[in-house]
Every structure is written in C-alpha cells, then in structure tokens.
Amino acid sequence: MHKGDWTVPQEWHLYRADEHAMWDRLFERQARLLPGRVAPAFLEGLDILRLSKPGIPDFAELNARLMDATGWQVVAVPGLVPDAVFFDHLANRRFVAGRFIRRPDQIDYLEEPDIFHDVFGHVPLLANPVFADYMAAYGRGGQRAVKLGAIERLARLYWYTVEFGLLRSGDSLQIYGAGIVSSFSESVFALDDPSPNRIGFDLKRLMQTRYRIDDFQQTYFVIDSFEDLLAQTIGTDFAPLYQELAGSTDLDVATILPGDTVFHLGTQAYARSRPTHSSGSSE
Image (cartoon, rainbow, N blue to C red; front, side, top):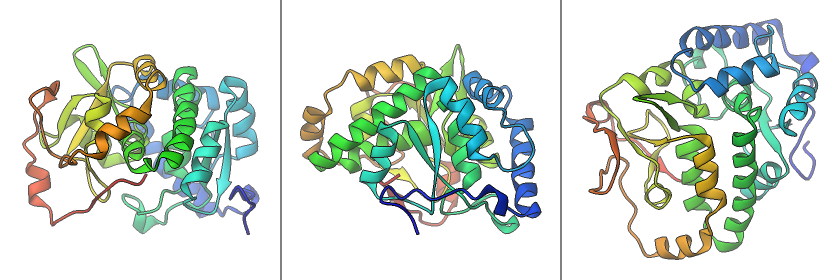
C-alpha cells in the first residue's frame, strides 16, 4: 500500500542474494563499456555517490550522499506513478525509483523501468548541480503543463533529453540519457550505428517529434552542454510554445527538416529491418 504521494519503503533488507547479483552483473558490464562513451559528469556521479559498492544500493545511504551534493533524494515507488505525482516529486527534488530488479531473462529488455534503470541510469547525473537544477525545473514545468493540457508535448522533452539524450564533446558525441546508459546494446547503437539520425537540440522541433517506445531510437537530439540545456528550457515561457504547437502536425520519428543541424544523417536501416513499432508521447 502506498502513501498519497505513491512512495513506499524500499525494504532493502528483503532483497535476495540473486537480486543483488543481478545488480552487480548489470553494473559491471556497463562500467566496462561506458568510459569514453558517456558524459564525464555521469562517471563523476558514480564516484560521488559510491554506486560501485556491490549490491543494490540502500536508498538511505545513497540519499545521504546525494542530499549533500545537490539536495536531491531517491524515493521508492511501487511502479509507474501518475503524471501529477511524478512532477511534484521532481519539482521538490525527489526522484522516484522502482524497487524491483529485472530477472535474468529480462537482462537486455523489460517494459517497466526497474531499479537498475532508475538508479544507475538516472541518479548519477542528479549529483551534477546543473543537471539537478534542470530536473527540478522540468518538474515545475510539468506542473504547469498539467494545467495547460500539454503533458504530451513536455513528455517529449524528457524522452529526448533525460532518457535518450546525446551530448556534443568537441568533434565527438557522448551519451547521457538514462535509457541509453543503462542499456548495454543502446550504449553502442546510439553512438556507433549508422541507422539513427543525430541532430542538434531544438526545443520546438523536439516537441513536434514522436518517439519510439519499444526499440532503439530512430533520432537522437544532441545538446551542447547541460548549462545550455538548462538555459534554453528554464528561460522559456512554454505557454506560447504549446499554443503554437497545438495547430501543428507531429513529425515522424525519422524526419529530417531543412533547418536541422545534422551531426549524422541516419540510414534508418535498422528500423526498416524491424517489424512495425509503436511510437508514443508518455515518459
């Protein structure tokens, strides 16, 4: 039974040895793969929060370090939570995380985010002050979007940054989105595969773009820095943008527009080789 804010006790003492072993297995293979691919701030967050300690993290210990770093904390929830609840937690610097961890047969894919995705994927960047501020600002923006009936548009911003964002570093690209960094296969696909588009971040254009919910992305948006991402979003009045987009046609996931900054024009070969997929707008 959850509280009104949907939080539940983590009950860390109830995790079995095989569940801790699954965390260690997932952590170990990502820790080997990510250096050189992931934004340095992510690796710094792993160190600050001491997430390399064996076993599923105890939120009580994790939160002591996270609060010291940026004033954030992780709270356990039984599963996906209503939008209004999600936004309220973010606005108040609380990140909601599922308690369960995937089974061995789900090691490479599961539909509902587990504790590895939520904690390993998301929490290290919450130790970065700029990204932590961006997440809190997103939560406040979500509360306004609820009142304006624009959650669908704002969810795309979360998807293409927090979950599946890329970062420009000189002449190369790095990953930072949690959906990528927690996935062994997408950590490679997002940077190395010729199939997806990789284009420059543009807020209006991004909010028009559908996304893939059950396979690799067909387009990734590239930011210049976390500082620039925060500046572009926290300094924008979204209400007029929502009104402008209300009459616009959504863009297909693979669309390239004449004004796009194209870092890589994808072949879309992977997507064409797959069965028909779903696209959506809820995070």
